Length: 383
Ligand SMILES: *Cc1c(COP(=O)(O)O)cnc(C)c1O
Image (cartoon, rainbow, N blue to C red; front, side, top):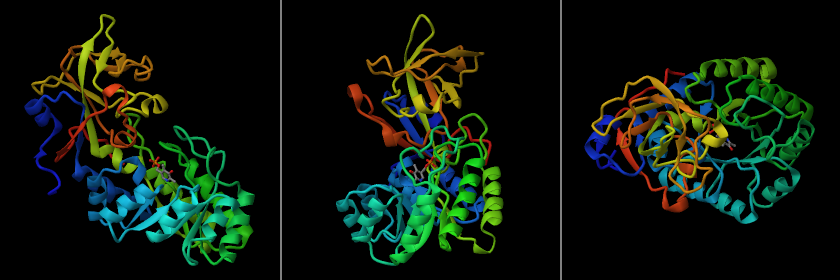
């Protein structure tokens, strides 16, 4: 923990002592370590992490200390960052479209696994990647169930995937398959349909898969009570049913479900409008960039600058961000205690995924501090 100059017991202690003017993110490494342990216990394969969800060095180091040996990376910058932080880690380069210069950098960095979703990209990889490395053919299906899904941008349909898989083996690479059902998927069918089709593709290709990468997309608790264990159980049953004696090694690469719970944000109420709308010092161009896509975040608390919890009756409020753009408004309304006043802090729990990653400096806002805490105040109900 030498990286952190001081560690606070909870975010409330820090808010009371510091009354910060900028947005603050509270990072609880112990919460992250616990989530990592729970994912490892619940998933029957190797658990890796999608770096793009939150590339904070403290996050990467905490996961490495917890025994993580492989990471999903998408760009040369992520590859370089991981090489510096965890030199021995295996890197899975699962962004299926790369420039030739990017492939060269990945080969030089010793990347061990590459996702591939078409012959054009496959040929580019073959020209540079040493034989024996893993190539994971990325399957795309029109699967519903995610907050938003990725199948429209990447992936090959079942027939093309079978052809590609045969080519992977013929070219001397280790055959694997992968998919990524989207993000915040709460329906286990998102995985089970993919698993069944992957087994059919492998059989049609006459290829025995070394590994099957089930992607990320696992839900975090955004106040809707999402749970992971039913998804893990459905995955296990589907793999057993679909692959039988040809069971590949499994891996997954959660981003959101791994890191969301480890961060809590505190945003100050700058102003209250006559109509009841509240202006915060962060919004859709800051740490809350994904809310317009994901919908309202319901795990909210309000505390006074003295650290006293507001306990008034819930009242629906519109929340605005600080910029001059009228789009900078959080979706729908959220219930806040009716005794909230200017100067209070609205605390967003479970905000570690895709917050720092997409923060901008639009309109001169976007500066924030990260403070380490032993525990974030409000825990999710569990996996
Ligand atoms: C974004 C991404 C992930 C992580 O997704 P989450 O929804 O954050 O779990 C995993 N794998 C790939 C290939 C991705 O693009």
